[in-house]
Structure formats: structure tokens, C-alpha cells
Image (cartoon, helix red, strand yellow):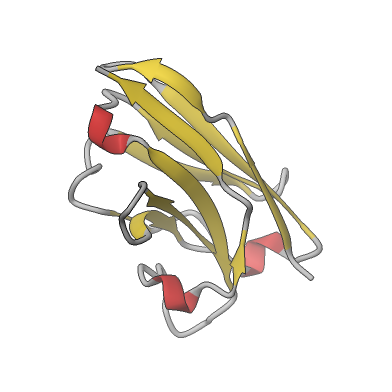
Length: 126
């Protein structure tokens, strides 16, 4: 089955930056839209950003728009999340997810993603 492995998480101070990576395998990567979600302690998993199969379309949660950038390299089977101007409220486990649905170009709902990585912890200190 599809395998997704996130990396790049860590501890950073407020205002700092991190770049998350998600390496995908056992799939035709360019046939999948990719998304990033996050889950903070005691909260539900929430959408962060998504990118279409070609990378030509992206969508962001309002809380991260202008600070985060999602991108992908289909030659490397990898999706990235560049996170700038990090805030303590961004502290969470970040998950990447893959969706092969053809009807939705940039899925934003978790239910539309059948494949998930194990997550990487991002902690922003104040």
C-alpha cells in the first residue's frame, strides 16, 4: 500500500521557520493530490494545505495563508511544507496525506485522503 514518511519537524522559537518533507512510495505520485494536516493535543485534526497532482493548484487554511507554502517535486516523489513566521499556535503533529480522487483537484477534507503518514512533531516555543 501507499507509504508516506514525514520528516523535518522539531523545536523552533516563535518567528522561526521549518521545512517539512513527505516522501511517498508505492504509488504513482503524480496521480495523487497531496495534503498536510495537523493535530494539536486535545484538538481535532485540521487541514493545513493541499496541492494538486501537477502542483499547479494549492489551497491553504486561513490560519497559515501567507506564512506556509506547500510544494511538490514529482520527480522525487516528495511534497514539502515550508513554514515561516511560526507561532506557538502552530505546535502540533503534522501529517501528510495522499488522495487519488479525480473529482476534487485540491481536497481539503481529511475524509478524502485514504493514505496517511505517521506524523512529525512541530513545537514552537514562545
